[in-house]
Image 1 (tube, helix red, strand yellow):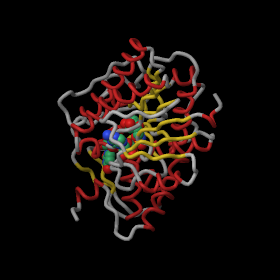
Image 2 (cartoon, protein in one colour; image 1 turned 45 degrees about the horizontal axis):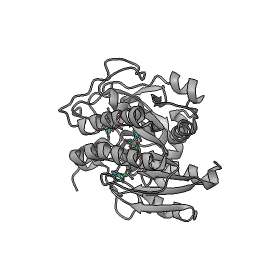
Image 3 (spheres, protein in one colour; image 1 turned 135 degrees about the horizontal axis):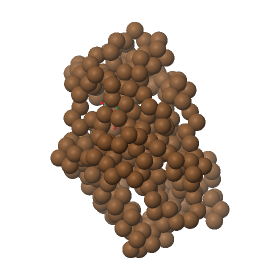
Image 4 (cartoon, helix red, strand yellow; image 1 turned 30 degrees about the horizontal axis):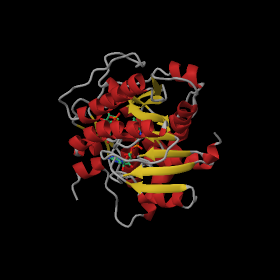
Length: 332
Ligand code: NAD
Ligand code: UDP
């Protein structure tokens, strides 16, 4: 099928990754239907892409069934930032579980291929390092992150079950920490918090002693990986880690952001977050082998466009924006 005749549904399409993905699909000549309840999505993303003439926006909560014509479905609907997904844990869990069920049913109805945006959080606070796809994880079932981690695990299980029993053509991407331009200023994740704090000259809020690690993937690399995974022909009922295997401590990230912004900000250490994974780094051999994919953009090269994005955002806002972390320390 020529891509220009193809309709791709992207749930969560008004969010950070969804916006970049829709933009890429439109650039390839596809028709794109963005389904989003706008809980963390941005109207500016929708307005920009609507101008293409091949983009339709449907405001819809994926916890409710939906029936749309689709050749392919990317299921990205779910908040990704811990403060956002912990704010309404029941909604988060049900978005993952009912959202997956509803979108899988839509895939059955259409005979469509469907990709699930899963996460490195399925590995929880990992006891195996780095993490390959065979690792079964260490998730605290009663903890504040469980709504997200267990919700994503359950969604994956539904994907494998629909594949086994109904022969649905599935793809499962386990996405590791991704950052870049077009993130919300109040998103609450570490890169956006640190860059905003550095640009405002406020203390960078490191939770704990800063020795915990993450591996950061630039958004363009991630979108390339997601598109390759969706485009891959043949049966692929296996999860695929997508992320950048270069690992940084949170202290390293704070130092790098301060140096790249030329900020006079200092670092302040706050209490460690409950169940915060201590380490995280993907093994991406499967993506390298099957998709011929690996990330190309180093943190040092991905941070400048990200910093320019937030600097532009700050310059257009009338009131000083306050990130989750900033608000926590300095209530308005
Ligand atoms: P985001 O919060 O920017 O985007 C999520 C989008 O989903 C938002 O537009 C939001 O309004 C929408 N949404 C949330 N609940 C919904 C619901 N019930 N019905 C319809 N729409 C709903 O997050 P993101 O960083 O763009 O993440 C996108 C996807 O990728 C998520 O599924 C997330 O779990 C996954 N992921 C992202 C990362 C990352 O580092 N960015 C890492 C792992 C997994
Ligand atoms: N973090 C931090 N300060 C912040 C935000 C996050 O020290 O202002 C830490 C957080 O505790 C975690 C890491 O940075 O150890 C990554 O957090 P993020 O919320 O970006 O993503 P996560 O990988 O936890 O989902």
